[in-house]
Image 1 (cartoon, rainbow, N blue to C red):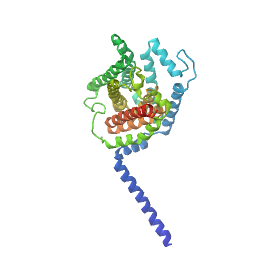
Image 2 (image 1 turned 90 degrees about the horizontal axis):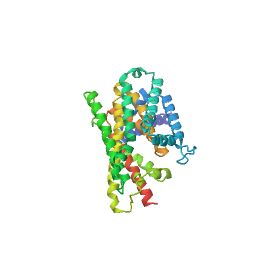
Image 3 (image 1 turned 90 degrees about the vertical axis):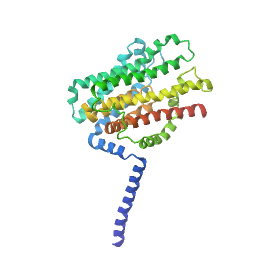
Image 4 (image 1 turned 135 degrees about the horizontal axis):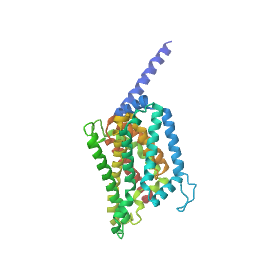
Length: 352
């Protein structure tokens, strides 16, 4: 009898010790607020059926992108890649991207409405106008490279013309997104919220660097994979540049700097505009539709990166929704981008 009482006393003590350790770990990592965001989303807004549909969507999209089964004049390619090439050469690139981006975004909202029984925002003209504005703007951004290349045609004799068009394109794409969205925000939401997530309120730096630390072994493992090294480092697409040529390193440095700024603008558009500009109409329903379209923009990336983009996009979307800040998301997004570049550089050029 005494031994049983002793075991009963010891067990709660052990449990309390474990809980104390967990609480200490959470406080040490600085993730208590983020865990609270995730807990609230899970209990109040999460539906398993919605997640199942999202998994089916990502699986189907991977089939269209990565299953190479159709011959074409450009070699054996996936169906989506062939559609892109056809649109590119037939000069209907903008309409192709409009369909490519609007379909998953609207599908995400439809699935959300079906599971949460919320249809009120479908009757709002502002909702449809904002959908069209956002998709049209990002579609134009996706096609700007061709127009920039044509505008710089007088410089085609320049040895690093491909690098030059990429640099100018990155600058123009970023400015285009920020200026157009700023104009919209200034005339509609300026009095109700900061510039779509550019605020340090509810923001702490530590948790986001902890996230990057957890991502380090995953990126290190990915850096050994052939499909990853086909896409990264991104500067390898510039055939005129040679990593062994010291004169070319200034070109590499400028490209990598602007490469990071490009992810700055991507984070602003997806977690800032696509969530915080919509939140007054749809509330938390903006999160998963944003993740749907975020998956699609990774269609030219390795499959592992595309699949993980849904989870990462959703997580950063939840944080942006509750905190109303995208500063932490920018740190994570830009940090991962640079870690992938560094990992690929090390794997491809130093341990080849």
